[in-house]
Image (cartoon, rainbow, N blue to C red; front, side, top):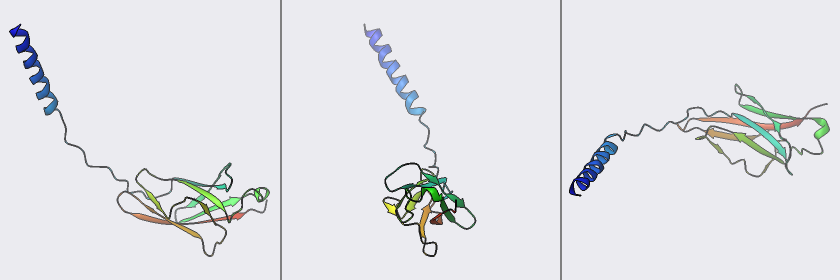
Length: 131
């Protein structure tokens, strides 16, 4: 009986020592340095299918060509904007709510801030195509 108890204590001590010794130091946290938009789209105020934005990384412009036949459904003064960014990137101001993307001379501007605090600015605007 004493021998069993001795082996149980010995086994517990060995497992504890092994577990404590095998703990690795945590790695440095990975921060994205990429503050780009991965994708962006607009939806009508009432919801529905989205229209993908065309992103020009050179100028920082994002435009949404709305087909003329969809004019009644998509009011470019009242659109929902949805964007996809890296997990540690933030968009300011928030895309929550309806946005007016109709004025190209005074476009809606967003700033993306990556995990390393690098930023990138985009201007968003929508227009109706001729067809």
